[in-house]
Image (cartoon, rainbow, N blue to C red; front, top):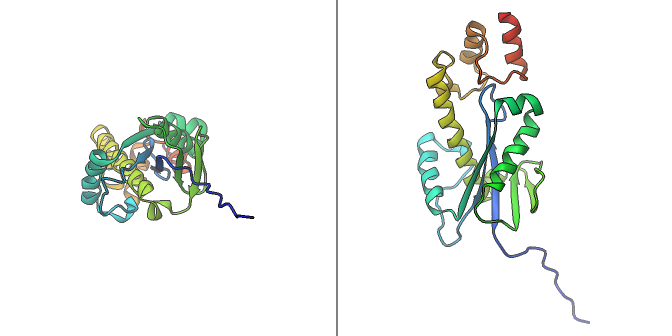
Length: 200
């Protein structure tokens, strides 16, 4: 009897998904979904955290120009405070996938959790270093969020968002202690809550 090999991988478009901004004390969490074009390869894709800001900006433009489609989604500070950061991240990822112009047959998500989607999905730990489409998504999400941090800095320069991007650095913690929390701070995060209580 002849053995028939079962092929589980369905041919079709695969999207990579990643997020930026789970850890910071301020600003939205941003997710991106990217479907790359095999006929238009992009050199130098890597985990966004391992690239310089200048290299990320250049790759951002190249991904936008060459990818078949890019979707970006985010969850606001209010949603983060209401839902919690994990659920808000999943929501941002759902919105990023929903924003894709083309529907993928499969979604590869960086990390160990998958948002609820209406397509096949797989979580890949350290996917941003292993899968090009996830690397591309990590770059789109990071650059998008960094640009938002520049906007936040323009509104609230006393916190230094352009430097620390909302992370709980010594500079940021000192500013929180001096000025209290701004409207873009995540009040459900313990250091922000402590700063508000201290100011009160």
